[in-house]
Image 1 (spheres, rainbow, N blue to C red):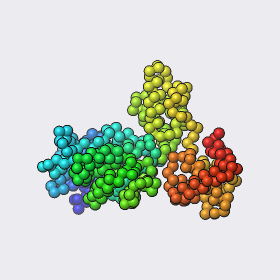
Image 2: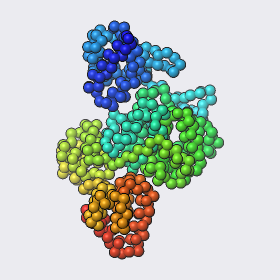
Image 3: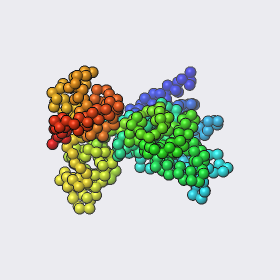
Image 4: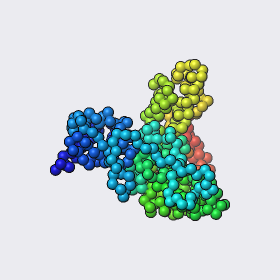
Length: 465
């Protein structure tokens, strides 16, 4: 009965705390905490690791203290039970400094960095950029699925439905930022885990060196020690048979051991070429999350956040102008803004739309609006005088089928959407149908001049020329 009482009081505490912080913060820092005792003056909480102690004391105590005082009493002291290892009892700590992450082992003078005699487990540099965290990542419709899955993975690496997590999208959309943010989040929540980020090009270079030195076995064993392995640009595996075999062994071992794999690519698994089928099958085991170009509202958030980090005061009309006219990706948005702020500072001018026009016309290609699949479908339907409901129906008359093929062809030419996204947006087709449609339209353009003229006319309407 006593246990039920302080458990319920702690739940009341959480309900009040939830009103003062974001849902993401609550899930991240307070959902994993559990009360284990209250003797009238000392409230004891079980926390997953020491990072929770530091975060609560630094960020949330000013919210928590008044609530605890009201519910438990003004003299209540807060204590934390921190498990050292799974085989040991929790060790209790009070409001004190928290040790930093274990210092990476110095491997500078070791001949073979993949195996160190006499050490069962080493700590190594995770190769994470300190600037790529969830704290400075801007969430939007374009990246919400990947970000949410990443946060879920950080709570329970390897023990989730997203293994591997496969994030794909065009260059500059923030794939690297998200996967490195997951790495940072895992290290903060689970400092005992080994996290490693590596690009596939670097992985390939390491494999080649290991092959020349006869150290392939050591190379594979090193990667099998990792708890959370993040591989960037997995499409670079294309055509590299030896590297694919090594990666297959590493992938299988980590999967079977309940370790977490996170991959990025510029294409979905189904569109990767010259990669063994057994690997492609495994890439599809978990979750594939697509990163799209930022929508207008997300671009506004990115511009404002970047300006704040740079300490610049950007008028809202300039923010809106940038969001309207930069249509490419996150990297281009941030680069253009940095250029604008630097020019304003060095030239002693105010940040205005006039200055933005002068700078951006030589820095990025300005466009009116992003060309979308929906825009292409509307244009094609208007040109052929076909109702959009009919266009999207299961009807297969010659005129409707040809209109769909034309829309797929133009979507492939003028958007950055993967074939799978184009197909699902136009009649719920698959990527093979899109490829067939694009080939059929291209072949007809080669043999039928009047049809080619039609496509060129529709293309001008799509581009607004």
